[in-house]
Length: 364
Image (cartoon, rainbow, N blue to C red; front, side):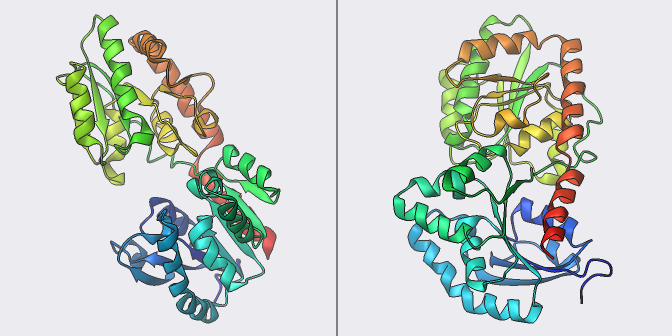
């Protein structure tokens, strides 16, 4: 039965282990009768604690964002099971998160009220592989009554593909969770919270910090939170740059402890080579951190124009010079306050949920 006052049953197709899925499902189940179908099996029991019907294809790994075209064919094995699950639920709306996996499954269900959310590589990379990939994506997106895009950047890509039926719904942050409680670092601390992968430009951050350390006269350090395949390579780079004693790789930080990571920083840096949106930038700004980042992808639109500073990836010295200006504590405090105000005005999770509900309510 539908929740009182909502009269809407919604079937969400998404990876059960994604932090994004967890946030959407946890918030939307308060307003609708929600069901979730995932290709991957759940790694923990968070879904069991919610009033949500859940079905998993129980794939051994996370197929939902696998970039192998051959492995994507495995999605088709889930169609029969998914169709039966959909018959049992009889949803008013089917919402697929990530076009080239769950969007393909949604197309098979043929629900007249289909919503597809594009997340990043499905719209920014997949259609550029070949004309066949582009045509395949367009066939999936044509099934959607409404397409949801996390960023304006992806909206531009949708326009280029000929789709105008999209709504930009940013992935906002919980302003109460990402709220600074204390910040009293003994020394000036620069840092980031990112996966240790090539696209996130941690190697560029190391170069920027090296240049900064050369021109600075105060004690400082660089803290890098995250795990990834480039850990050993990055540690080697730090040693080659002669800054290994000033750099600490803090390892993976879970969502329940991530705010404490931001509290340990005075400045947040992100020199990504590619970003479709930039949730970490918003989290850092919500924690009153001035942001220094690269001028790529969706980062400019989530960076506060008055407090954040953006650089081209080759502007190593310029970024280092700017870090030196942030040694001024009062300047950092002012920019941090402006950064949080920017998030509160534009990118709170409450605002995101409201916009998603408006999409659902417009369909039924």
